[in-house]
Image (cartoon, rainbow, N blue to C red; front, side, top):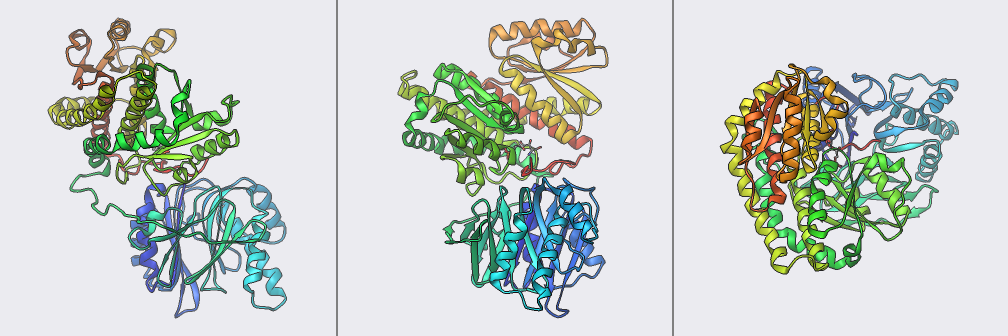
Length: 621
Ligand code: AGP
């Protein structure tokens, strides 16, 4: 999942491209690069660096890269093909150094292409699949320019088609040809690409956030299309070369320039923002949800609630299951997006799927959406990005209104998902006459009170959370256990420990320990216990804890207020307050756990906002 940015017609294309890349850096930050057609030297000059945009800027200074031009392209990389090196950073080019490309995505027929190109004499300077595309265009150009003619726009379109039919995979790319320095050639298959229009300026990007504040007119390229882009003219084509009408949308794209607001990391800022996010949804959410269900009344007739997501968003779905089970009295299923695509889909046409994705660009999620739509299912997208592919491809959308989430590890978006699903469950339950209007209306007040509880207890329990963070930071690994929704909490905690603290943590249903994992319990093994508010589950959890203690395992508990027995059994614990609606108790636990793990990672000196190997929006499969 890389970011690609291009612009034409801007006097200082370098700064425009670099600042656009900075806004999209959360999508991938192994390496970065920039190229522009230098008006004075009449050639394309490229510079690349390992690391993020800041490292690229440093390289520009150190190497006195001063190219300036009206047309430029840039890239931040999350490697899929080839090691993290400068020579694998984009833009990559062809043998003649006249075709330059920045690409997001992966080619599935890269091996065949590489062999074909090598057989016809092409030599490669990188391990990337993206470079193969540049060589394909080099070959296509040679066919045209052998005839000694300057390439015409008509030939450009034919050339695009010829190459695109050779490529298999999911991709979005921007091409800059040294011979045509007033035009960008762009194409997408599955992965997003859009064009923002200013006054005699055009911006191309994998995410419109790159040009937030610069444009209000945007063209989101339809899937399997390509375009010839100039500063004041765009031609859009279908894969077969037929020209398409350009449908421009007017949208105001804002970017939270507020930065970290004094916090050391975006993740900590976003953990503290959770209360405000929940309050916002308590205010706007009931109307958003009621209007949505009113537009899609068949939602209330579902016999099962199907939720789809990846990573922390899938965990949010698990954390929301109790709402539908307790309020609507129907089961709910959570499908990990990748998993559901490899299993038979028994859902019937017309049934709904709730698809959770903060970025709305997760490739696995989008592929599952396309699969479900092919089966005639209806898609309710729950996303934080109104301009995302999910928002455009879903039949209807609930916006999380959480504000830009920059840290790769999702925090405020997890609670936003849960809050929206809490309101949705109340709306469906009310329309199915399971609860009264008063109970439905109370949901918003419960959320507002939950927000206060979270805000207060991140402060009140700070010492305990920091104390436990110190203990966890010393551990090489640990188990995280819980029962029922407590296991959903355990999953999210285990993910956060892995992704930001780089500590191996395994989530395990508490009752499952004795069926195998208990073999790993000894005096060196720590187990984080996520307690349950449900009395029956709590009683069983105590038994599981005793099974661990009897094998000298160490217990660190997230225990609800009043649960003294578990406190006594624990080597350490933090008390989790129970909010007005106990159905929301685990949301408090999640928030406190995220805070605790943030500090664990900080103590270990991790790259918290941009953990190694990860990206905020996983736009590759
Ligand atoms: C962080 O490692 C990842 N961004 C991941 O956990 C994330 O939750 C997952 O990729 C889903 O992202 P989405 O909500 O934007 O679809």
